[in-house]
Length: 364
Ligand SMILES: [Zn+2]
Image: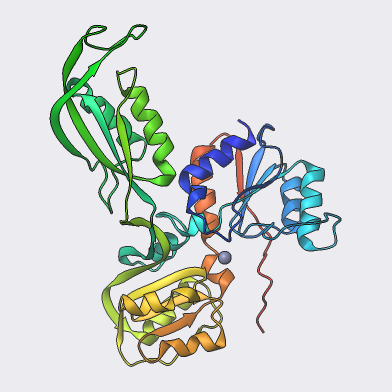
């Protein structure tokens, strides 16, 4: 196992194409070809976290927040970012980040929050647009099942909570093989009619190259006929923030007490209570104030996030409760996503959670 085995696996969980345009997820420091010793999962990378990885004999740090976000013109150890980079290079430790791409997927940061709050009917608050394509493959009918399954296995055909979705039409394909070819059926120089199935599936762009590769591998033809169409559909399987529902409504105060307990909070900054029961909850781990309008639009009773500015609280306008629980606090369980996923996939390697408290904010 080498470092790139870890990064490739993380990108199966959270494809890099799902990160926001301003983000810098991916391998940030280190040689992807060095043998893996062990993995340290953390929310943030600081020089102390790099020291911790070194002390524990681990050589890749997997973090949620990218250590390097803006360009570095010098790396001389002046800032905490430079110090951490210098140390990581000195100790031959790789640093990897899965940031907004982990926010935007099922099973990511917000799924975890929804799970902790015990919510049902989870959906993305702002689904990703322009991220779906339609793939149509023309397959000899006797091979349709094999090719269709290969496409499903590569991630094609997911719509909402359903997988293996496809549409199939029987028809007839024609072709004429020229000299030098080796046709699966038919004779060279003769027009051939073959019963074929037209298989249509929806594919997320992030999975497209794999789906096409696996489809061609499973397909018996030398030259495979297929089409790829861009779609205007939103991808409801990925996006920013989430909304979900409690089993039964509870009072605003009771709900805020649950939030306080689940996230182990000293305090919550929130707008006026509205005297209504809470049932529908919108939330976004980290800095989610950009989703306040969407939270109101879906009719959520409360929106939970971090980093809400003074003037953004005014946007509640008695239509919703905005509750700021803190950036770190809202994302503190993200480390468990890395930990559980990596532990399951690298059972023979040390996978540890950082013991360093990286939250720079203190309360008195
Ligand atoms: Zn964050």
